[in-house]
Length: 218
Image 1 (cartoon, rainbow, N blue to C red):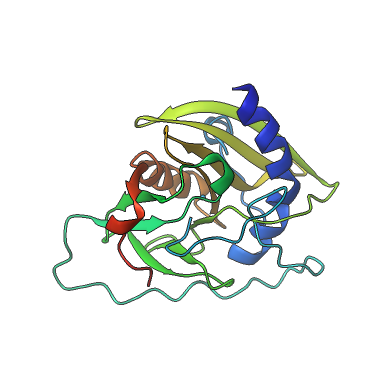
Image 2: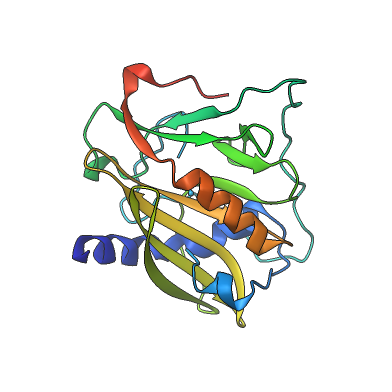
């Protein structure tokens, strides 16, 4: 756990700015029960960051929301589940040649590409609800972060929630197994509690697989 705390102290330097890029700037208030459980990889190798695994969008905050992600058309008869495979965002803490795998319901989520060109899962019913690779830099002074440790499925996650003026902006999940360590960020606008609940179902499925078994990114 000490390793997780040291790593995520560095990670949280970048939590805030990705929230502006993956969803609108309007803050989403999470009910107290959700705030307590607060605190996202790609099908392609993520660039190694010295301190954090989030790309920073840069620029000043604005109240104009970015457009939602473009989702692929749902199949008339989708399979019961699909996989999202990608390189872990902490390659230095992961076994070379191992990828992560998340399993998701294609009726609820769609694998697409975020504003940074990285694979991400977009919720089909909740606009701006997105699970994306955790990568970035720079935590504004107006944000505070709370940490929690919980087990989702078989994975021990450190869950970090970023707040601005008491309102949740986004939630970061960092965890893995004996082969990988990776991080994901969940962004949302409205319906934050529902978004987090559905996202945790996906994150609970995290396992490691050999890179040779990984499915191609979209």
